[in-house]
Length: 101
Image (tube, rainbow, N blue to C red):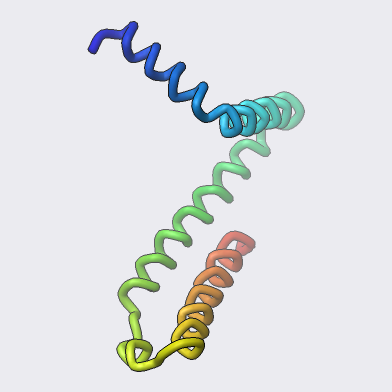
């Protein structure tokens, strides 16, 4: 596969996902505007993004390793509520990590 084929595939991929491309372009434009107004904010945004990604990875790892075997004994709405409670606690931990200094 040569460079021309790769470029054609990239354009086909982008054409199939026009909705996402619009959001990506808007994000890039707003990030560029922030960089022009106050370049230090880019570092803050990068730091916050890194914290959110790291806490999400830790949350997923804990969610998968701290599985309560008693949940498998539950049925129906009780089982669903047990999983919902775990997911809500992990989401709260991720948000708390994002807002921590």
